Amino acid sequence: MLKHTLIHPKINEIIARAGHHAKILVADGNYPASSKKGPNAELVSLNLMPGVVSCTQVLQALLSAVPIEAVNTMGYETEGPYALDEDPPVWDLYRAVIRESGLDLTLESIEKWAFYEAVATADHVLTIQTADQQRFANVLLTVGVRMD
Image 1 (spheres, helix red, strand yellow):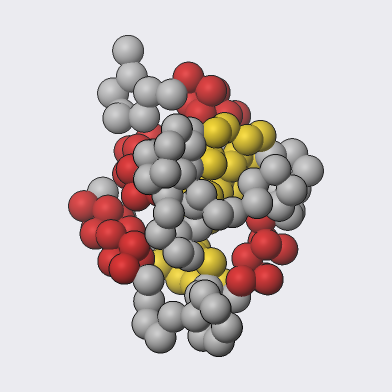
Image 2 (cartoon, rainbow, N blue to C red):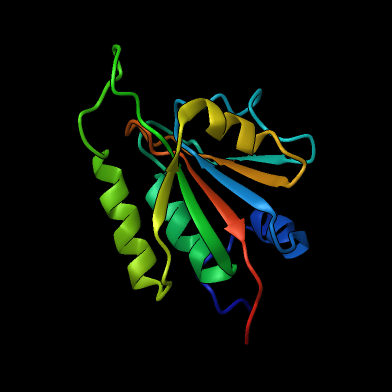
């Protein structure tokens, strides 16, 4: 019986095999999950309908199950049709989830194209595709070391 809140069998199987430095992408509904992934990454689609499942919900479940040493978001555009002039509201939700999980981590953004490059590495083991409609909701987790 699992003690953490993450109960999805395939996701648990993949994270159980993941080691230190492995990357887990929680992708929003706009992310090109089938074409922007690492060569070793598996794709689990949880996109049932717009907004269900959210990236925040997936982040909360993952943080209950696996040690994380870094949390990166995709940097938002400041020009063009998708431009924002401040952090996307979803980032505050992520900060709250990280804090509630007891982790002392800072949410750090990576420029959009560098984010795609970070995902395309051999360390990327899992993409969880959500149907989150919030802009710039993608979050890339780096697996840490279990200390207890």
